Length: 326
Image (cartoon, rainbow, N blue to C red; front, side):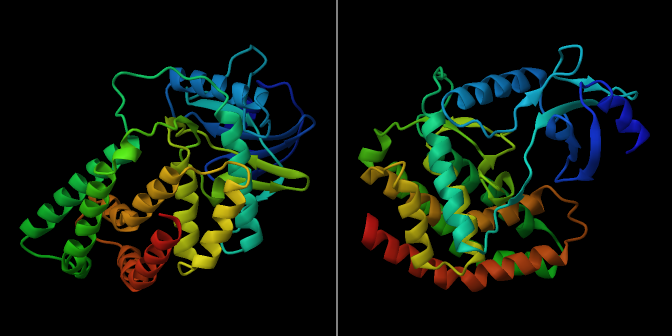
């Protein structure tokens, strides 16, 4: 145990048995159970709202979340000698969902349905500043971001191999983004459909823990009020990318989720529009936009090649999905 963190641990009513590293956190086995210590990555007001939300979710029937734990002074935030803020969370002894194992993925979407049932019971206050359809707003914003990256690359006097590859396929993916946005915007039933509740925000394989006697969901830092389908989409998109866009797998995941959290017709169409949008291409663009452009990582070029290679399989899946569900 590092001296720096030992003084933080001492602020909590627990005896440490062992410590280990996790994703951006320290996993601690204690006499009170498993705990996770991590630097505070949000404002105090946001933390307070997350604590309130997770307490309500637990009361609504989904207790296995990473709730924040008070120190011995009754505070949720503990500072080290350098005044760096830390929080301690309830954690769980388990393993992450394997995104390449069907049984794990089915359990993950079943778990998501149970989480959504609980989150739907938690009241929220609509904001007059929030867009009517968040997925539509997000898609519009990301299309603008794609344009900005393309325009920047075009103006560069000398281009890398990655930039030439990006520009050569840009029109194809940008057209997909515009078409998905236009189709969603022109769907009258979807625009009047308001199935909104609290959502996890980043429901992926890293935030789903498979325990000996159940499941747990962690890392709610990006929670928001949105269509629950956006959480399901986040998980399904990654599952499809990692499993060659198998339609049979997608059907099984949808069946597992809708067995507990039934879909309306509009939900199937919303998921279709989200899958249509070239999010992986946008993610690569966003990564490029936020990096030092004097040097481009070969990993980014590999990712872009993968997107291009998988495009045909993705389009086939979208065609079959549309015929079957929309």
